Image (cartoon, rainbow, N blue to C red; front, side, top):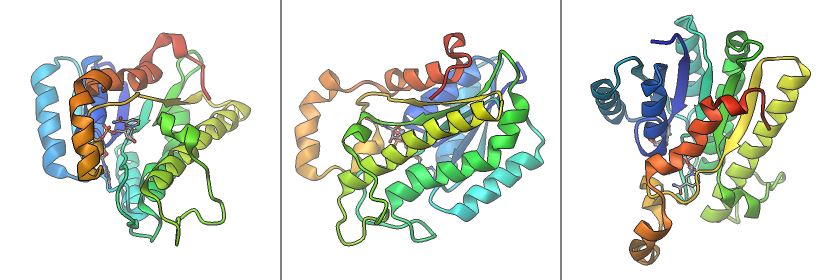
Length: 251
Ligand SMILES: NC(=O)c1ccc[n+]([C@@H]2O[C@H](COP(=O)([O-])OP(=O)(O)OC[C@H]3O[C@@H](n4cnc5c(N)ncnc54)[C@H](O)[C@@H]3O)[C@@H](O)[C@H]2O)c1
């Protein structure tokens, strides 16, 4: 093991799993944070079959509950481990109008607010783990969808005007803006922490499970043509997480 530690939220399947597997393959100790224990343990077992140097571990985290996010961060900190890479990957898309435990619209609460809270709680650990010439890195899984999104500051919960697409796009706008802001704040404080947003492109994962039945039918013939595999999609986040070319580069 190379002494480097990563957390990947939603790392049990889809692109998160590919990111976790790749980072473990590089010799890192990867904590897969997720809310489905069976999936998480299966992911850990698969990674351990494959990698020689690295290590994977599952730690429960329900991103749709701020209580769970706080508990996760505390349990992680109690371990006294450093943290070199935080990949904020967990997400939902096009779900019907639902709320987090605290009553926040689910896309906004899970995709953005949960990660905002988690990153804040782990920032000092990241700052302690980054060194000059080897910054700790935060990678936010964004989406090109954010270009068409807008933050409705008067109605972040989309009450009374819910559009699943609008709510997803809004959550990614918030996540991208947060990454830019975090980068500026970390640089201003002289922290050895960088933050970037990674766009994976269109990737064939369970994220599309909430498409309407006709939209799913329409997607099917194009999947092999237009959609990337989870491993291909994961490559931008992996690049942001570990590429030497991006040392010190953020925002
Ligand atoms: N697939 C695409 O085309 C695409 C495009 C742009 C961005 N993205 C983003 O990539 C990220 C990964 O998505 P994916 O495509 O691999 O889909 P996926 O559905 O396979 O992965 C989503 C992950 O989030 C986890 N998750 C969901 N709810 C959770 C909760 N309450 N607590 C903890 N974990 C939870 C899931 O368990 C899963 O591991 C998402 O943030 C998504 O918005 C995907």
